Length: 261
Image (cartoon, rainbow, N blue to C red; front, side, top):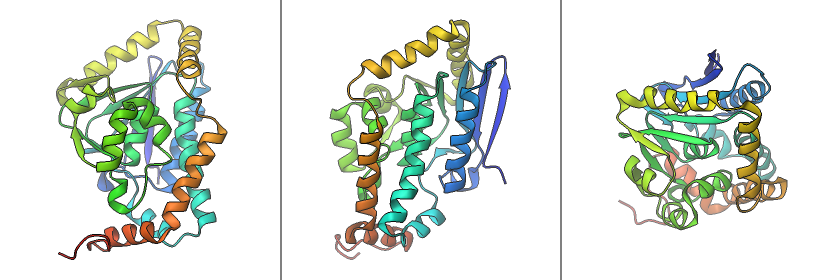
């Protein structure tokens, strides 16, 4: 069963996550579908802009619980392979030759923030919330970090990576994580306005401008950096604290590093 839909109209492709029943959370199948969709759309001459959207109340809640249950028993080698697929999906979205817009209609947590950050432009509903929740599980947001840190800046990342606080759309706008915040009923209008601006521009110029920003801005997200983030999450997932954090979350109990409630 497909976990997303793809439509193309007037040179604008829309990729919509359709796992509303699990808050559009990632699993290996969705990661594979997103990777394939952005690879294919990036190569299409009739596509000049890609909108990433989602159905339901949440944009993306991060890792699917059933996927997390499988990961909880992975070896380090299995964690490396698994994290590598997520890293490749984010790389494909970030380096897609077509400009991308995240249409964030609801909450984006953990890996979901990585999806938002990997897109060139992000428009948020004013009711959406954001959270880098990994440290609550004894984990780190390693694989998404190159994109999220670029989007919100290192100073904000120091706070929100370390505290796992939830922050609202207004704060996401203040720190530069999203570009515009609008009421939910105005979301499509704002996204369409930006998409039209991208479609109206010279397609080769837009492609070159996107690469220009990526080439000039700070450190390149290259194979070395991606490999380091993949190893970082694999190491901590396989650690005693990482395993305890995930198991306590899945079993709805207090982790060992907190006093029992």
